[in-house]
Length: 241
Image 1 (tube, rainbow, N blue to C red):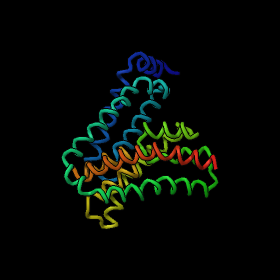
Image 2: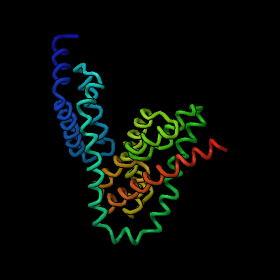
Image 3: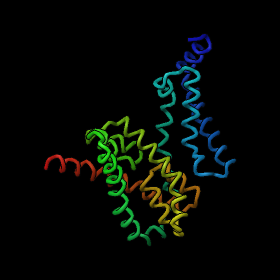
């Protein structure tokens, strides 16, 4: 290890605030780049920020565990960030109340489709049982998905990666698919994105419109609750039969 690398490693180890700063600056740079690119679907801020941080800590020779120890506080902020989704939900209360059948239909189709499509494809490709169980909660926000994965016998670390990949993919492809399918109702688009790609997709839906963001947040929340409740029970019954 060179002297410069040693200094960088020591500094980041002793001053965790730098990891937080690096993470925030990387995300702000990613958001700026996305805006300069006209919010093109491929310029997803989360994906860009991940790549930037990965390159920075690799160049500095900082172990991921060291970086995570310092930047872990940001994960704590995910809770308050999710709570803030109540704002667009409150503003769209009347529309949400009038959309009960649509919401129920979206969940009835979206939840099993999200689980069965991924697990079915992986099973057909010969994936191991642990991989299949890790895939099952991929459409749920990370905090819930990791807990579900651990409870049903999956690999939590693999589930976390799959959740992030699913969110980024949904945020990129969701709006594009909506246009291709000529969806004019922001409620439908929002529900589809929120149920399929949780928080990352919801952030993208909020950029589209407040209605899309509100319904994406609602879809994400309800999908998380139902998946956390039904998936472990279903897996248990399946293994017990």
